[in-house]
Amino acid sequence: MSSAQTGPLSTHPSPASPASPARVAPARSLLVLLSPLILALLIALVPAPAGLSQHSWYYVAIFAAVIAGLIVEPIPAAAVGLVGVVTVAALAQLVLFAPDQLARPGFNATGGAIAWALSGFSNATVWLIFAAFIFSLGYEKTGLGRRISLLLVSRLGGRTLTLGYAVAIADGILAPFTPSNTARSGGTIFPVVKNLPGLYASLPNDPSSRRIGGYLMWTAIAATCVTSSMFLTGLAPNLLAVELVRKTVQVNITWMQWFLAFLPVGAILLLATPWLAYKLYPPEVRTSPEVQSWAREELRKLGPLTRRECVLVALVVAALGLWIFGTGVMDPATAAILVVALLVVTRTVSWDDILSNKPAWNTLVWFGTLVPLAGGLVQVGVVKWLAGLLGGGLAGVPAVPAMLALVLAFFLLHYLFASVTAHVTALLPVMLTVGAAIPGMPMEVLALLLCLSLGIMGIISPFATGPSPIYAGSGYLPAADYWRLGGIFGFLYLLTFLLVGVPLLLLTH
Image 1 (cartoon, rainbow, N blue to C red):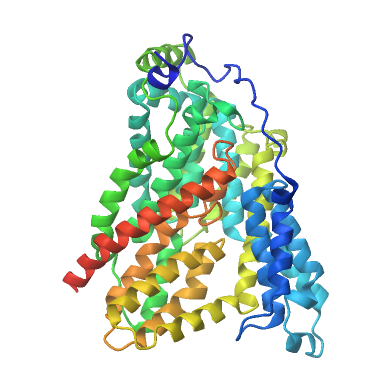
Image 2: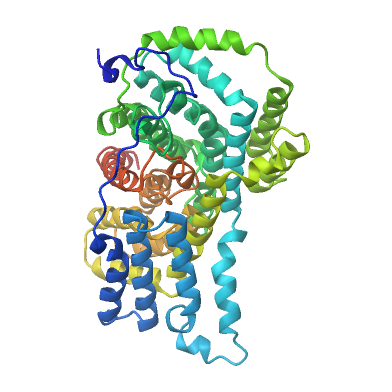
């Protein structure tokens, strides 16, 4: 049988298995490599559309070039973000600040530019993502990740699809109690999932990554997007959204109301996600009954838990407890960084280990630059301009079609944001205000639909939600694959949401 049918080849896989011979990638054309710069120049040469200032339009040109660069990757993704931020900061007086700001007495454009450029590195989510990578390092260095992975494989590893469902179910169990999906998926699920591919000789940044690693990573990030929409407490911005809804249109949304409203859609998506990933991003390893016996033998060889593993378990449980029960006392990012410090103090992970963790630092730079770049769209007025266009375009449109258009626009505009929190803050009040001005609009239904879409919209890009950069930086999901799958799953999630969720909400409200 082929490895696509039976899993490992004639020998049992292990993390130490040699990588497959690297394939030589064809040289990409100069036109593709220069396409982000060409796109920026073409947009900049077009006159600014009505209602948008010229400096805002120049910012759009740079932002579009960054997105194009993240897709084609002429240089590494983190470097693309860094170049984008530096370009905006260097040209701040032309692209970031309005003429009236520059004319204001005492306004310091250079100081404002560097403060904007570095603002992403003071963002709590950015550091929570970084801490999640260090958690993963702890699982790797202590051997706990391998032990848990072997346990999963010994029980469920006979079929790749069952492993996918195990990952999705684990996220679903944690979701109601973990308001940060970065902490839940990036800090708890990812460190375990990361250890699974190596057991099947599927290595990161290698042709063998598609053996099983790509499938498991995509299933994990897709599942957490579904569970983030399923529970009010499954995603931190959900709580902010409910408060903004209450203040803007005086609609109160309870935990149970949220859960029941999304349950029909969520049940379908959570059950379908591992299977969809299996079909749309198929692993080469499908079945591997012999690996279960091998995993049991490896577990026997490992023996009892070591001291370092026990310390890591205690610290992870402490972090999980703070994420679930301690949000009123300590921010999830603070809790995560505290645990990272304790990992070093207890010598569970060495400081040199942290310094040498290139993916963690790479993602810190990448997301730390994308946050200000996306926030800049709000600062220069692009988001407000888009919302105004939408409001004007819906004048005279019947309530239900207008509601669908608002939900669709709200979902798709998330391509412009590197934070669900920023998306909620910038767009939710605007969409609610536009909807309230339309005669006959069922505001409770509109508010629920906008809020319930926040989790599932996180699937669309490598920076759309907190855990996204963690999985995008895992080495198992190439940028082109991530964008392609994000578009496909985003379409399927949104279509299911509109076809199932909207009719049920309209019938029950």
